[in-house]
Length: 417
Image (tube, one colour):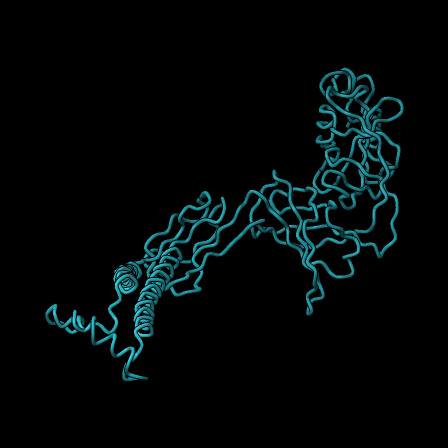
């Protein structure tokens, strides 16, 4: 086998018959063994390629930098929606309408679930009738009060009917004589009688007003229940779970659907108390989503103020970038720094520079003589969403290809012959 990136005799990797005849079988076998030994790096796992004197177009050479990082602990978490609600039944009844199924999107204030409200509508009509009766009672009581105020009817003989002459005689002789000559309860007091009558009509007016207010309150109560018969979308989002179907009979408090806004996603993690010193609100933490092994940087969004008394953990929420795929319930891993262990400087490279052949990671190193060397490395943890630590195989200051050269990549995929 020839060295990586070289083609013997310029014939696409084939050894011509003329060369075989000129070297002889023994010398040819020695040449092949020598070429094969060049592909091994003294028994180590690294391999090198000494072709590609110039980098392929578009390749970028970067310098390996050092990063002082603390030891990180990987914790499992769950992807949750930034806003999620469970809509429950507020009144008993039969479900007569469901707007959609799981995955359907709705705008804010759109109806999601409706419960039968025929009974409530009947009660409302009865309450409206009571309100109208109270309104009529108010009108009548106000008229009676105004009449007593303008034309007093107290102690008048006209209340008992009769002809005009007795009424006139009573007002001109009987009532003045009794008010002036007869003492105490026998003669009475016209002023007090009038005040008593006014107070009575005023009481009737107040009672009618209270009846109207009571009927109005009953209407408002029924209207509130009618609103509770409709479950509206509190914000723009999608249905993520449906717990009832049309025709089901529900009771107050029974869950109907789960509704969430999937525009923003978070990772919820229970962090051990000993690791909380390494977390601050707003800092970026590497995260891996269980969707195509996607890595990104998550921001510490919320640290709950109290710890779990049983598990001795603190709930922490991390904001995910907008372009990260996934949904509520998916698994995610957060790499939380452990400040209890000593920190050290390690080489850090872009993850785009890493090539994989099976489970072996490698990078292309730009040698000092302008040639390209393929070198196996050992990777550590991610220090950010796109940068990974190198435990062995590279040193700080070496120059590597951030994006491997196209021609060199094909050589790595070749198998020894």
